[in-house]
Length: 393
Ligand SMILES: [Zn+2]
Image 1 (spheres, rainbow, N blue to C red):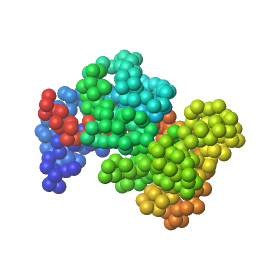
Image 2 (cartoon, rainbow, N blue to C red):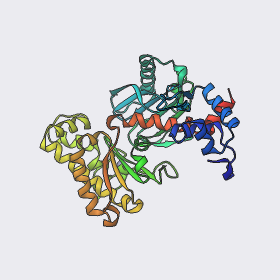
Image 3 (cartoon, rainbow, N blue to C red):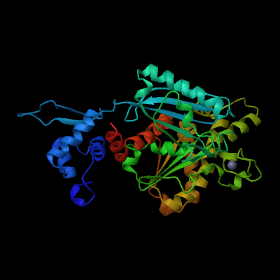
């Protein structure tokens, strides 16, 4: 944004965005990029330094003369709390303002817990992680939560979830209020995986599909660098697309013939148990596959193939540059992706798959919490929010 483009003079929030992205690292660069006068640059920086968001220090001299002071975004000017809540496992983390995990944990839980049963424990874990990482609750600038659900942005909770029982219509922010006063942001689990790639794969690919293959199945859709949630937040509900292979099978959403009923982690676990193999979680199935278990490998590959078939239509429709795999099943990446390529290439148009990249998600196991943190950061460090916060000081 520059002043002479008619967008109005760059605000402190806009200057912070330049510094965060690394597009301006000195006062002179801020001036050049924004078209602001030296006085105006000084005023914006003074407000940002005062708020602790920017620090200005000397670069080690490399030659003659005094080098210009370097402007840095202060990633330690507070923290964000992230909670990736799943149907049978939840991960919690405290992250710095660049979304890097400072302290985190992961706990399995009994499936079917309602929000009143699960959320207080999650808040307690946040409290412990804050203590462990040496931050007071008052330093928390935002909370990011993901749930396996179509999310109601108004209420900040589940609008509809086939996985979480008793969560629909329940706002999640109030559970945190006793500990944290900062704003709480709730999003879908596949969407936060896509958000975890901002600054990573999203720097190279502007159009991608992030497949979450876990207990359930979903896609985070990124078009032109923007996350697509759809009119009611239901975009990318891959698990409940009807699949001919699932005909006659009942899904956990109550419908018949959903893709999840043959390819979701929960269905694979059921299948193993039907065959007399005592496993209780998709992660156990993945561990077996990695240890060379032929039955586990075959089931994961078959799941990949069914997901690839269903994904073909999305690839034809959106023509992404990359399909990125995340979720528990991505730990058996080679096996799952061998099946996924098979199903995808057999069903999608060659023009859409010829140059398509299939990749693993950057942050693996931590992608969920990193994505939650990034979504919260995107919201609280948005230039408009920064300007509001600075003017309220
Ligand atoms: Zn279903």
